[in-house]
Image (cartoon, helix red, strand yellow):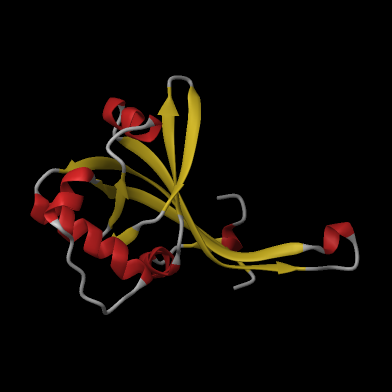
Length: 153
């Protein structure tokens, strides 16, 4: 990282960013072109959990290559200045890489969806009808590496 003073080195601090974030951007490969998709997610035990329809470009790309890049940010605050170069942004962010695994059993899907719901409504208990589980794709991204950055936070 070029700006070492902005680097987040502490894994616990990076985990806090993942716990506080609301949108995770997945970077996938579409042949020789990048494809980025913002998604709701849940974070637990060094994994990110996602839900999706069972078809579409994202799913087709994940079936071809399970290696993905991800980005989550939080605490964004625009800081206005008196000049164009005086403006800045305060934030915390994490960028990382990992592999995706599709969850197949209803129980695994329920567990993954509970982590997604806990991201937005912690402390509540959730259940999911079997019919909906059968219609929903749930996948887990196991984080292999990540880096963090912060500015003004």
